[in-house]
View (cartoon, rainbow, N blue to C red):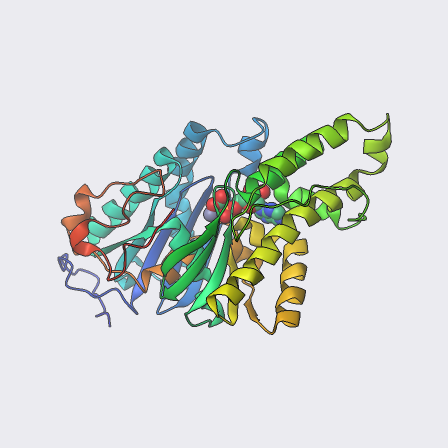
Length: 365
Ligand code: KG4
Ligand code: ZN
């Protein structure tokens, strides 16, 4: 448990145990600038400043633009997270931050801020893997490991068998694009804005999912593949007679979405069955998709599985999930984290060896 800190206290040099304590959490791995206050698994505040409008004119995320925007927004976002929780700096007992995978410049902005705050206040720092964060969002709903978690975002799509806390084994993964990428590319082909996933979801709501035939062949086992689907949509749209795309945009969106969703839902349920697990969770931006949520509810109901379905705000990138993951992870004491680096690729270790958690040899990609 944490000790409370007095206003004028000198740095405690990492003597504070942040677990169960008051954590300032920071997430800047992509294009959302986010800070949250999390205490013992409860989220006191969570602020997300989206950069969507900024990147929309480029049709995708421009990494350098994202990094610069994080530097402009982060101070205000952190201040707002503290204010919304009704706390001052002195209440904090630790800082948790996403260190990878993600856009390296964007990650470094969050990590530099987290280090500076933790160092100045003599607090320990907890580095968090972005995927661990997405998975941990489900702990806000009270789930207990073990469970199967479908992680589907703009950069990753995998089936994680969560064994304890945020330790997981990858049971299946996409062989090409991530599901979020498939949504975004499909949206672009349909002339929607960026990021297109949520817009495609809205358009699909009014459509007939049986209208356009989409390929049904899938990789064997519980791996995913989405690139063929995207190409199929491209050719489907190219070969339509004049005017048909405009007339049937929502039907085509619904058909395309249904093909992505079918794959995600079927393989998730199959994974739970193969693993002999009765609990299924979902994480990442694509978990906000209304079609996927409906499909999982019905597949889990008919398969006798319990489903953990986080609210939309905990599916897309946010710092609250970073705090929920941090509760399971080792803290690096003051000031040993000063040399800690961010990492862009998933294969890099989450923590330096001496701070690694018990079963951290799990594949994190
Ligand atoms: O987890 P996330 O916020 O960021 C990454 O870690 O990538 O996921 C972003 C992805 C984007 O591809 C976005 O289009 C997709 O999640 N997304 C959706 C929906 N909301 C966000 N895809 C389908 N339907 C949605 N409602
Ligand atoms: Zn994410």
